[in-house]
Length: 93
Image (cartoon, rainbow, N blue to C red; front, top):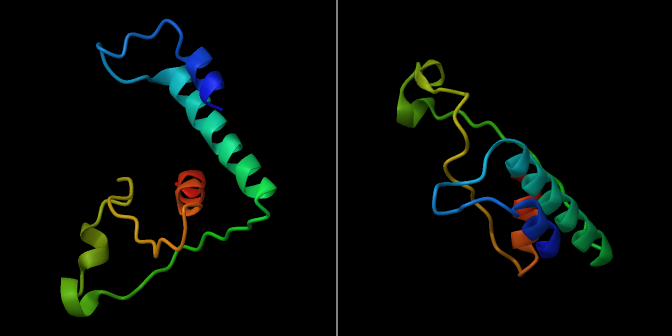
């Protein structure tokens, strides 16, 4: 996986900024496929659930209209049971 990402990034100057465009997509795809292969080989299965709670008591009655749903996730809560969590979180997000 690392070698593939290094090949994808050949010619990019990281001093000028982050990768973008097709390279960014290829790196993300390579990472996701690598994590899937690792987890399959470790006989792990995963499940991703989005849960919605009513925070009206804490944030007010109109809080859902004020939230910008286009923004990315700012916090990931996990119970970190083992070192495999890093692979699962990388795969899901």
